[in-house]
Amino acid sequence: MGAITAVISLLKKPEKSFDMLNKEKITVLYFSLALIIFSSIYGAIYGYLLDKIFQTSLAFAWKFPVTEILTILFATIPLYMLTWIFGSRDTVINAFSRNLVTFLVATLVMLAILPLNILYSLTDHSPVVLHIISIWLGGAASIRYLYLYFKHEKRKDWETVILIIVTLCILIFTLVQFVDLLFHPTPKVRAGILAEASYGFVEKASVVR
Image (cartoon, rainbow, N blue to C red):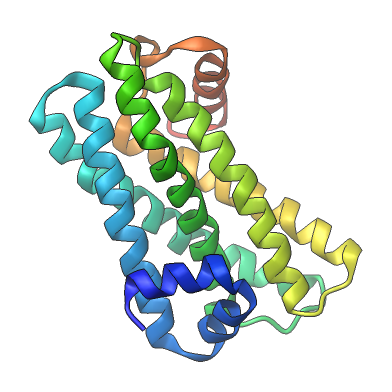
């Protein structure tokens, strides 16, 4: 099963994909490859829309996937340990796979909205607006797949809710640090209420400031 097939399987039959992620390491590799490819495509196009400069496009093409992969890696061990504290006999691969699915789903949502952002940018609007909206929508979709993943593992409802909250908090906190380190967001790229709120959140949550 290739990277594209893996993504199609996740969207059509998520439970089957969850089983394969937990049992077959090659599936984890395919999903990781899909995330890197899709994230690079998004980063390259969004980077060009932002500045109309190819250097920015190339920089974002590697910064987007690197940011996501580093976030997944750094958040895996804390989440693995926390699932044990909550009584689950989890594995590192399980924790990594859940993080991987979370970011892959969010990236797919961002890619789906990208054509609209291209059209929006042609009317001399900032691409940051729809970029921020796509991030929030991607996060919402990720919550759904996290819920499906935890329920597939036969967890109780209260445990699922707690683990989703803990997972999102750790992933968001870790992501903010790498966004701040690699992208150095400034007030100059802000646009709209959501963008203002998102920038403020990064500013307050980042430990490198």
